[in-house]
Length: 221
Image (cartoon, rainbow, N blue to C red; front, side, top):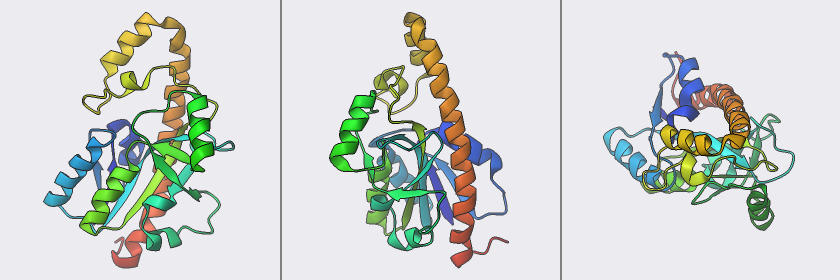
């Protein structure tokens, strides 16, 4: 069984809607972002151990040339055998993904980390999920979609988008912030529009990536 793991429900929505029941794939939504995702995943693995974990979700671009919806495969947080099956393809970028403690709110912050690390993208979970999978001896593939490009500032602070105390998205906090900062509403709408594009791109990529993994050891039908 393959477990396709998302931190938050919004990231998984398009893939969940497109999922074919006959595939031996479970969709796990951890419900929390950041370091807390490791704790949630560990509990789920203890209940139902998958043979492969595909960690999927959103990421911020750290390099120029990455557009909304582009797919990045995390070379440093993926099993080498799983990576080999993707090399040579032109529809994905394979490179380093850096896991950061907080959402990168400004283009300057993303550019700075991109220059220092050389990573293609930043997320909140991949390294934490990879650690749990490595400890459990479960091969993992990290698949991320770009939800905000290098030049894009966040219209809402990271601690509003994701509550740092709970690791969860809080729509009411976002509404209150936008109510107090109406000039940010248009930018936020653009962020959501980009996130929906990224959501659909991620679902499409997973639909292409997962079947070959299944066919190597787990028949599709």
